[in-house]
Image (cartoon, rainbow, N blue to C red):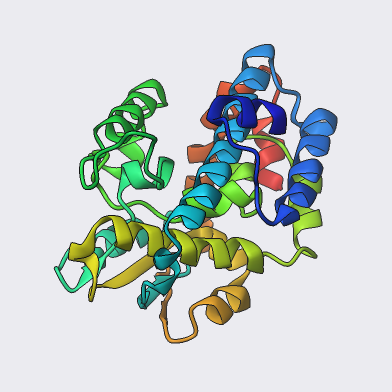
Amino acid sequence: LLAEAKRRTGLSDFGDTWFQVPLDKLIECMHAEAKLSERGEGLWAEKLTNFLENRLIRNQLLKDHPEILDEPVTVSAAILSLGRTGSTKTFRLLASPPCHTGIKGWEGFFPFPLEGEEPGNPVERRRRAQAIKEAGPDMEAVFGKTTIETPVEEVFIIEQGFVGTSFECYAWLPTFIEWQKGFDQMPAYEELRVVLQVLQWQDPSRRGAKWILKSPTHMSAPQTLLDAFPNSLIIQTHRDPLKTMPSHCSMITPLYGIYSDDYDAKQVGRF
């Protein structure tokens, strides 16, 4: 995967290689537990390679433009809640006024400029994000009508460090999830801050606006979130867990079917 990412980008410097520890564990657990289909293996290999490509591109971008790290980033609030509690609607509401900003859908997939891209005109990244959206499962019934411009949670950034709770939404990986409880996710949150700086640098109109964050993955590292963004307000939406958890399970189990022909929905629910 590392070699393929280097081949595709023509780059070789991944920067800090802390991410290889969770990546190795994730792949180990995928082989041992996830029961991926041949199609699922191909899709995961592509996803993980794309994450590695982004790491190479980001590292080169920071070398070429060290001023990015001077961008002052202010997080106004972070929504830290179980999924299916109204957190997405709250997030989109708070991210909508001009004084606030959030990560857009296409930025979640492709936060860094591509080679040859005109500043302020990310046509190719938007095209690729639209293709991914159209190829993926139809989630409109779950999240309402969305476009690639709709604000999305930053789990799409955090998972590129091969940590966070998103992986359990796509594959049966109980050992990885348990292992992660003892792993320090701070490097992923530090990289999230850098991504916010990159997005601000690409779009100067965001300067002065405060960021709104939102993701259930923060529940796996709440103190880390506060250490990374110490002045942010924490917002927690609430819904009866007896309604929340079945809703969550009914949302993720169809996603398992994209990558595996052999999974047990009842087992997922118990976990």
